[in-house]
Length: 220
Image (cartoon, rainbow, N blue to C red):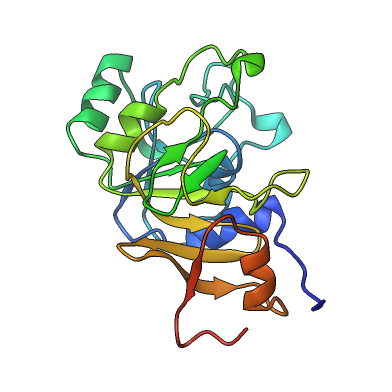
């Protein structure tokens, strides 16, 4: 067994933030994705969008700077950067459906090797109220990245051959960031781009529910 340290939720968010390009309009889903707002590299302009009608969100507010009227789609308090704006819910979804969002980062219960995404319900017992904006985002945004733990709390793989949970979208995901690795979804399945230090490819494969492929430049 190798000696490796999985990334924390904040470290996962920071890792995703490093790859978001200058000038992109980006929607952040509920959960780990919302933390990304705190880690956008200084000096890089990334315009954060929330489907309840905000463009130009900043990092989370300090405890003494909370505006009770300013929340994201996950009902968390946010800040607004200079030049930010508010607008109607319908206008926000017109941006999504019109293909104006460069990137959406979502959480997931499962991602299949062909890019299928299951991120809104695991079973009838969960009684999730609705899929929310995820379906619109998964088909409307120009690219979908997922950030999630590599396995469930009881060690079951989240990266699988085919999803067993209700699907949010078909073939939508292009990249996955986990607490163990960065993995691209390709025509040949999951391609491992990066692993946490000390983790072997064999150990990563053991924690994955389908075949992984290793980029030649990676040294496990």
